[in-house]
Image (cartoon, rainbow, N blue to C red; front, side, top):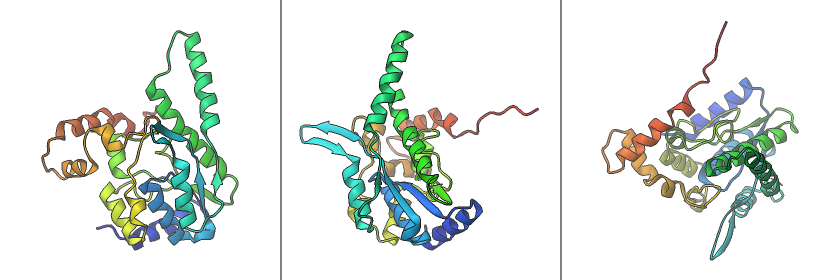
Length: 247
């Protein structure tokens, strides 16, 4: 059973070890960053937490365009940050992908969907570390959870980076439980995570639910076991330490 007091203590002790005094967190509007945002405020005090919005248009459909900026602002305002730091990544992303596409074309290559998906998380992490340099003891908070990590649903050196990782050993259900203990509004905890290109939810991309994944990890058989096993196996390389030659 997850206990918020244990995690708050871990955060405070961990910050001392890494010389941290200001928590820098990218607020996406998803449950993970929202719960960690609330956790940081409780652990370090509002004055020592800097939420950063890194919005882009997530997807457009017949009802209009959804931007992660809208949810991010709503969450920041709820916690008393009326004017949070916001860095629009659309132009930077466009320039990067345009330059990359042109370079690929010159070599007879075409940029793939997977290349696009990797750029945004790494771009955001680069900007978060730039923000951290503006503050004494600025340290970036990792927002990855165990479910994403085991399924390989993360970008190396992107959303998997950070200086301290409070929920990396927690399944999605445990993150939700932690959020309830921190009195995070239910509407924030229910927001389904989506990818940056199509607006599909994680579970739509997987073809199974996070609940099914947790049952699998607890050795309970289900109809999606083969899909889950395949995702874990194919992403195993992302969880390995970098092979390093030592003289």
